Image 1: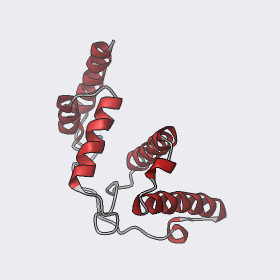
Image 2 (image 1 turned 180 degrees about the vertical axis):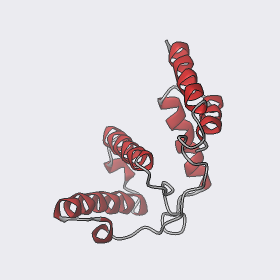
Image 3 (image 1 turned 60 degrees about the vertical axis):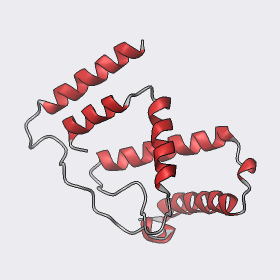
Image 4 (image 1 turned 90 degrees about the vertical axis):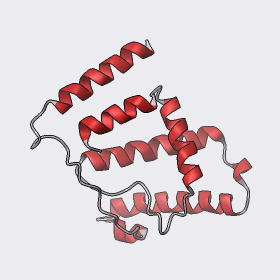
Amino acid sequence: MAKQAAKAKRAAAKSAASKPAATRPSAKKPAHKPAGSAGQVAGNAGDADTADAVAAAVAALTGAISADRLATVPPALLQRLMAAAIRAYSAKVQAGEAFLPFDDRTARVAPTDVMITASALLKAADLQVFELGMWQSYTGR
């Protein structure tokens, strides 16, 4: 089953690579934009509510990390948060917004944290590093 899925992914990536360069995503590196406050990110009142809720969740999780209270965060809740963040980031990038997943000047994410997370994400999606490399070469991302 996993081999069939991998084969389908490779076929989809190959067909994307055969598109003319004008229709493929740009290989240009995303702009490095500083993170703004929830109010700066929001465009209207409904957006402000969503941005405020996300900012509150970030603050609560960051506080739990700082206070060494991660035991209070259930793994299932963290999994749902990661999945939502991944889907939101991917949707924004596919919609044409070019920004990195975190601002290294304000987020303070250690390289080890990135490697642990990247490895676990690939494992959770049943992907191999080779497949990631192939996808990156086909899409320029």
